[in-house]
Length: 191
Image (cartoon, rainbow, N blue to C red; front, side, top):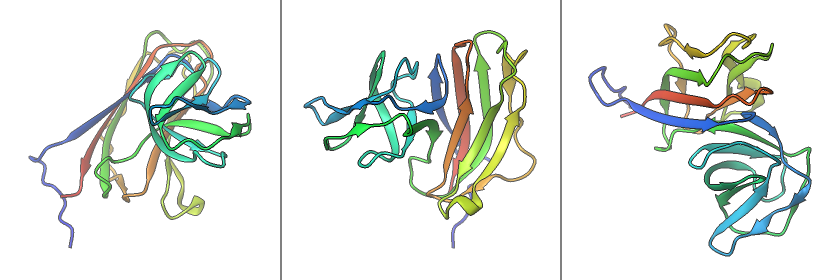
C-alpha cells in the first residue's frame, strides 16, 4: 500500500523556460548525430532552453519525453541513440513535465510568468497525457486569453490533482509575441 507524503514532508519543484512557443512542429530536416551520445532534433527558431523537457511525437525513432541537453537556434540536442531519420513538420514537440522519480505524484501548483503582457488573444493550457491512453487525457487548467497576462499564479488546486507514474503534464501556448516565459511546477511524489 502506498502512503501519501504528509504536509510537512519535502515538496519538489521543476522549472521550464523559453522565449517562443511552448509547443509546435519539428522542422522538415535530418536528425544530426552529434557524436557524443546526443542527437540534434531540428525545430526552426524554437526558443526553448536547455534543461527543459519536451514530449516528441510522430517520429520513427525519437518519440517520448526527453531532457534538452543544449540548444542552437534551430536545434534542440537530446540524449538518444542516433538512428538516421528525416523528421517532418507533421511531427510535434510539447514542453512537458514528468515526475523524475518514476512514481505517482500530486501536482500542487503551476506558476506561469511572462516577461510582459501576452498581448495576443491566445490560450494557455496545462494538459495531461494520461498513461492509460487518450481516453483519459484531460485539460487541468487554462487561460482562455493571455492578452493582459503577465504573472498568473495557478492556485494550489482545491481538488486533488493526482497523477500516475507514466502521466505527462504538458503545456501549450503559441506565444506569437515571443514573451520570455517561465513555468514552475510544484509537486509532491509518493512516499
